[in-house]
Image (tube, rainbow, N blue to C red):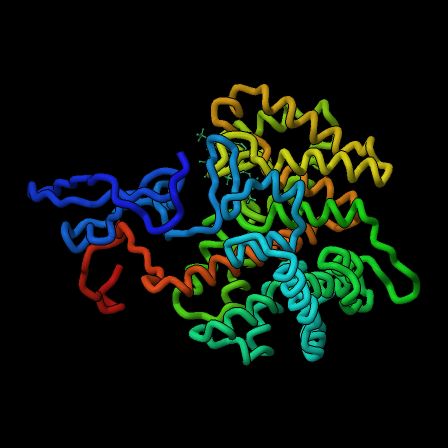
Amino acid sequence: MAGQSGAPRPNGKVTVTDASGKTSEYPILEGSMGPQVVDIRSLYRETGLFTFDPGFMATASCESKITYIDGDEGMLMHRGYSIEDLAEHGDYLEVCYLLLNGDLPTVEEKTKFEHSITMHTMVHEQLTHFFRGFRRDAHPMAIMVGVVGALSAFYHDSLDISDQHQRHVASIRLIAKMPTIAAMAYKYSMGQPFIYPRNNLNYVENFLHMIFAVPCEDYHVNPVLARAMSRIFILHADHEQNASTSTVRLAGSSGANPFACIAAGIACLWGPAHGGANEAVLSMLNEIGTADRIPEFLERAKDKDDPFRLMGFGHRVYKNYDPRAAVLRKSCHEVLDELGVKNEPLLKLAMELERIALEDPYFVERKLFPNVDFYSGIILRAMGFPTTMFTVLFALARTVGWVAHWNEMMEDPSQKIGRPRQLYTGEARRDYVPLHQRG
Ligand code: ACO
């Protein structure tokens, strides 16, 4: 049942009895939706015990009002709006505004927000020289980590995290400049000149223009592709306390500047278990090659002695169809129709793989469904993006989520530095033995 948004409400207690027989009580807190939590902040002080939860399997790391996921139901909502509604009716900057401010914008608010984003799309000209320090064959995610981190060396007037206005300017700068930096990373790898942002285009069109235009000919943005890109951006905009968002929060908890925090998020996103999975899906489909080899790869995915996993399948939270994958599956067909590549063999292979896996008891029992990465790679490839750019696009779209969470944390008066503890299993205390006495 949905409750009211606001402060968590107490709803009972959990009693803990330690080894000496001493009991202590911990409040159960109820949010507006989702599982209740046990507030164990005083556990160590009261009992001398830590909790042990590597991978955060049952730990809420913070309180948040931005995004809600019900993994069993396959439900994702931003500020109370379903992802299906937002992807169908909204545009990306509207969703950005929603994530940052808590409500959908009025016409006036949207115009003002779009204007401020548009006015920050250019990067400091000196930054273009920074790119030249990278090898041409550098992975664009390596460039993204470096260049986004380097923004803190260029925008000194938005580094004071205690100043609400500077935090706002840094947030706008990050969302506005990310497409420009992503496009520059792509152009650099292609050996093509950088294309400057165009203020008469909207956010998504401008990005596609900076990616695909070249100075020697006109480039017109295809509206079907712009719509598909906008949908991909909306679907990736935020996803609650995932690994990269938690990384941004942890980095920010020490008081690090926003550009450094987002660079940390990009680094985390790069991993194949997280944002790097869409790139891995394409490599996997290419490796499988033809439908008759699917059973062989499924057997490998099930074999615990084989590190191979079915990329684009499974999710820590979703134990049902990832709602983002459902939207993208539809979008995928629209894009391939528009581009006249409906019979794209990779898409056919992907659909056959999905069909067989969803009938296989191993995947059924473990509730392993396709996730958002399963279809995004196919769409992006059809649009002309090289696989190395897939995670870059994810980072671009997710920047608003990272920024929204970073701001929420900075505005929380109870915010503390993130400092997990450990279950130590190394050597107990021992004396130093002089070198010549060892052996
Ligand atoms: N292929 C084969 N088996 C799998 C897969 C998979 N893709 N995913 C999970 N399993 C199996 C595990 O081996 C395990 O089996 P067991 O119970 O017999 O030991 C069981 O399902 C549970 O898996 P865990 O690893 O415990 O699940 P966890 O929540 O830790 O991992 C993850 C989630 C990392 C996403 C995992 O499913 C995976 O590696 N998937 C492939 C990579 C991928 O697509 N990542 C994208 C995630 S979505 C995103 O970041 C946008």
